[in-house]
Image 1: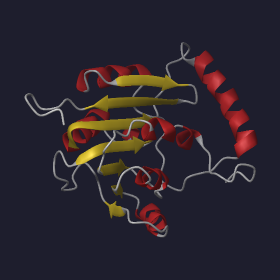
Image 2 (image 1 turned 120 degrees about the vertical axis):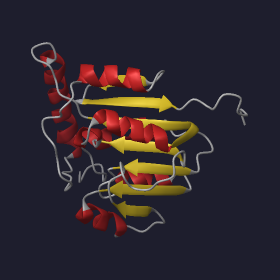
Image 3 (image 1 turned 90 degrees about the vertical axis):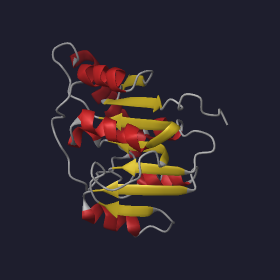
Length: 206
């Protein structure tokens, strides 16, 4: 943890604001996929009354449960856990989608969203060289500056490297599976996808 800021920092935490800024007004239920030790889930709980975090890594869930708060933490695989379809207003995920087949992950997230709900993903993808090299070098330099001032918090959850899908492939997949989604590639070696699930035809706008 950074002594100067008093707040944890790493490349994933840096983009939590992308998730939190996408939470729709009036959201009541949120799911944090691959929640780890629960930092994003706790932040979501500031805006959403009912938050569930799910992760396959039992030690991380144990750490999450050690924090005070009324968040429901589950050890399990969100692809197969018996959540009811359409039961969440927000489905969020940070640095998790590359641990699974990306198409399967996006399809399941979409299924769990109610009509009008928001999917918000921050993820890692693989660079393509030499074309991505200038952007990657810039990201490394800026990341080092952040680290010098804020420190670097290292997560204890399992990691996967390299990511199986490239940024270009992730952008194309998002456009195909989530029409109208907002894909953005970020400087600090991350991308984000924000998507609002269309309301059912003929449904009330309320």
